[in-house]
Length: 335
Image 1 (cartoon, rainbow, N blue to C red):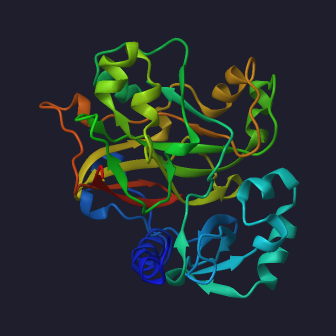
Image 2: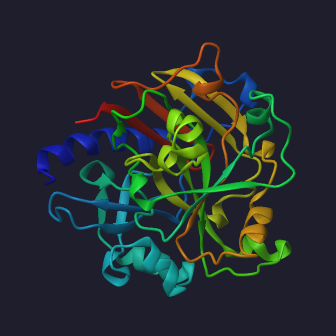
């Protein structure tokens, strides 16, 4: 049961992260290889159409839907019309003008008074692409794939932008993977590559947490258990509408653990781009509004470091993508 005290503690951390990631003056992003871990937080300005799901002490466990203000310090609650759910809003086909009008009429809440949830909490599918960054292939001494490698995660992996990640007792090789997540905006089947971006609603930051022993050595070599343990897909802090992202294939993407930079790349390294992924998948699988695609991770994962590094209870993972924001997740012991 969520208590007022627990929401207050989380809200304080979330407010700092959101304002740090979105508020204040805009700063340009330096080339990924030139950015130090001390410059990890982006200060890009928030614009409208950054959707968040949240709850408050007053609403208890009830999920609400809101739009972040320009400076990221306030949330306009638009839940009543859309059942407090982003996927319901997406399915409605509502125009951005209508959403802005609803947000303008709503009494704003301070971000530090709410607890952010994942911006999408119950997608029908989470589809993932493996080996989709050139650097990630190179660190494994693997050739660039000729076709994308798809696998899936269950929706029960999803947690919020500041929720805990469980170090499950059955694994001692839990690893990090920061990823650009794509949120599907409408039903997609047999989509042509030329039209594929029309089916995107927006983007968010993801962590594809992985139990490498179960992914690589156990379960007959199938990824499902290693990728789908509870809490293995933090998402957030917001679903950023595609109209705010000039080019999703030109974004700096970074991850640090305990303040030490581990991954620092760019979505320009994607081997199979978003339009190609959607076209290939929808040849045989129908994508639905709210489905999430994790597009792959850059070099720097723990498994391929020398020596290998893995997450342990007490570790803190910071994941950030240019213009989309930052999530921070603590690793906790399996109780």
